[in-house]
Image 1 (cartoon, one colour):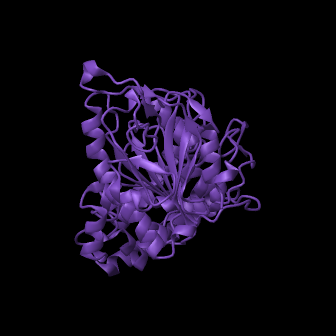
Image 2 (cartoon, helix red, strand yellow; image 1 turned 30 degrees about the vertical axis):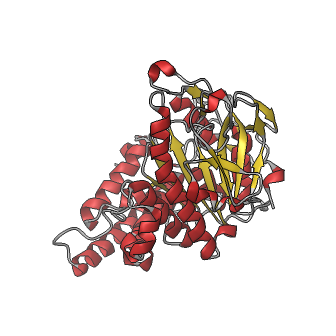
Image 3 (tube, one colour; image 1 turned 60 degrees about the vertical axis):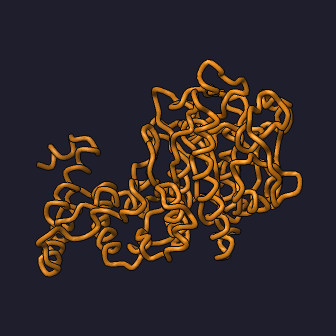
Amino acid sequence: MKSIFQKTDPQSRRSFVTQMACSMLGLTVLPTLAGTARAAMATGGVAGQQIGGNAKSVIYLYMSGGMSHLDTFDTKPGAETQGPVESIDTAADGVQVSQYFPNLAKQMNHVAVINSLYSNQGAHAQGRYYMHTGYTMRGTIKHPDLGAWSAYHLGKSNRTLPANVKIGGNSAGLGGGFLESSYAALPIGDPESGLQNSTLANGLTEDRFRKRLRRLKMMNVQFADQYNTKQSRAYASMYDEAVKLMKSKDLETFDLSKEKSDLRDRYGRNKFGQACLLARRLAESGVRFIEVDNNGWDTHGDNFERVEEKSQILDQALAALLGDLNSRGMLDSTLVVLATEFGRSPTIQYDRNLGRNHYPQAFSCLLAGGGIKGGLKYGSTDQEGREVTEDMVTVPDFNATIATAMGIDIKKKVDSASGRPFTVADDGEPVEDLFA
């Protein structure tokens, strides 16, 4: 059997061990927690000296589909490209946002608006991949996304909870990349459903569960003696990690019913609003990187009507999140990121009921907290929002800024399986002027 086992690929071995655990223990949280155990055992996942930033956690809000910059945070009053959207003043002197963000306008003293993002990736899959990884898609390799990099370099802050969590959305093509799958995010589909499959199966008593666990541990000892590999050692620890979470109060972190009803109302009783609240709870409990997906920004048609609808949800949730973090004294140690794969075309498509097309040449993203200066706009575009005219920020630069805010050494090289060295943000450099 030993020779057969050694000839199988690592994924098959992992699947075999995991399925055995599920069958014997009567629980199914193990596959998603496998990564947290292996991450804790990894030998190469500690970076060198931290080089800046206050962010212990990142809440990364991703506007999937391509958020229009002109209709949100890079308004051009009086320009034909602006369309019918008005600009409003904010709590930050000289910073305006569109009329769709009255609540966020009151929190803009905490926010740095970057209006000079530039990308060369104008399709959704490629743009999403580039924004998350800092690298363009290649057929020969998969790159880690920012959440995976942070888990690899910084490890777990809370011994029970995972380092990296993704709430909602499409993560196809993203994750741990050439790093072990352990560093990929724990996926949460519905923020109001808690961490599913984290309790004992129906009919399985506590006593039977303990007996099965003891039996499995005995098997693990024998297995590890015969197959002393990194994978087998990690999976032996995985069971302890899973049981630890099941028994821990930290499991309540995923339970939004623990929050007061009026606070839940403040975030918005919708999936994105409740996901932002869950993200705050996870950050409060020490999760390093939490991504929240908010899709539906691909406004080729009906741009103004759809952006208004999407912005109302975003405005309520993001304003509530910033206010909540600030009132809890968490904003200085939590970096809030609002990102998207590209902007929308300044040229309005009148033949598509006032739509806007993909536009990577210029777009906007936001940073708040985590050692970032608030109340400012960085970079600018021309009078019609077509071209970056000052302080261009590339996607790798943006990712390098986030990594630096977390204290990750952006120059630290990590070899892929093929022996090629990579860094967290390719050749990107942090935008130093954004740091307080």
